[in-house]
Length: 198
Image (tube, rainbow, N blue to C red):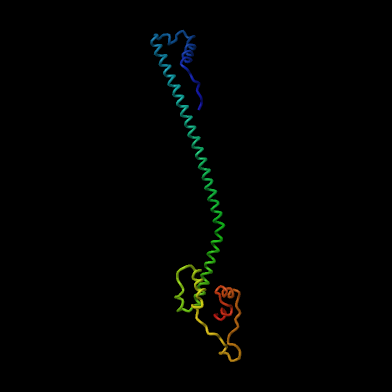
């Protein structure tokens, strides 16, 4: 906003007199003293009103500048706070990225435990499977089977070799693959027992 030169009543009247001094037909000279006085009072009132309006405009402009500055400061403050939230979001994203592989491994381990549980249940006779609880986690059920396995499995008679008469064994020699050996280990049985089940 450009600053206007402040004009006082005396300066305006003097300027008008100077400009009109060379002019023999000054309109103010033609007025009566009372009209001149009214003119000067009106002129002074108008100049005073103009001065007040300029001051009001300047005050309004100053208030507007102050409000804009406060708004800008508040906006910058919000951006700073949002920046902190952005940092927090980035930190949480990094933590999630670090934990995701562990969660995937946990899912895989749970699937493996379910396979082991299924294998353990298959080794238990049908009539005793009802004793295994249907509730709880896979790990709880496996622990139950491990703790009560002797009671749940069918008792096998000890083979004293009575069926064989000193000749060759009727049993076939079975060679287990690495995968079968791992499965036997997961099922918590010996390789020979696993081979006999095949």
